[in-house]
Structures are given as C-alpha cells and as structure tokens.
Amino acid sequence: MAQNMQEWLAGFAAEIGVTPPAQEELDMLLELAGVAARASERPAAPLTCWLVGRAGLSPRDALAAGRRLAGEGEANGG
Image (tube, rainbow, N blue to C red; front, side, top):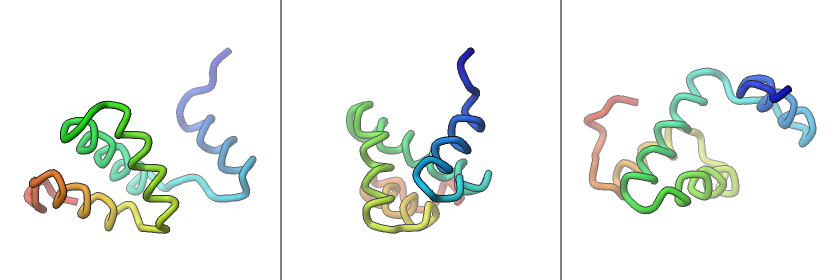
C-alpha cells in the first residue's frame, strides 16, 4: 500500500539523514511550489524546491524570494 505524504517524508528524510519539515515549513514549501507552478510551468514547482535545498534557504526566505520573482510581493502572508 502507498504511504501518505507524512509517512513518505519521514521515511525519505531518515533515508537521507535529515529531519522532515515541520508543518509550517511544509506549508511554505507547498505554497512556494504553487507560486512556481503559476508563474511558470508545473515542472518548475519541484525543481524550485530542489533549488531551495541546494541554496540552503529557509522555507520562509525561499517563499519570499519566489513571491518577489512572481511579482506577488508579501501580500499573501507568510
């Protein structure tokens, strides 16, 4: 049977030796993925999140950067 998202993230995080995102981080990363998908093409969403990890940005800083690039500013919270 397939794992739910939380189970997958916990297992994958353990596999690669990191802790899974807290709920607030998860929410911001999912929002960032949405910003990327709306501002570009859908495949940009997971690759944008990959770039966040590569850059070592916090989800909050990454979401702010994504919103700036998309011309959304900070009006949507975060």
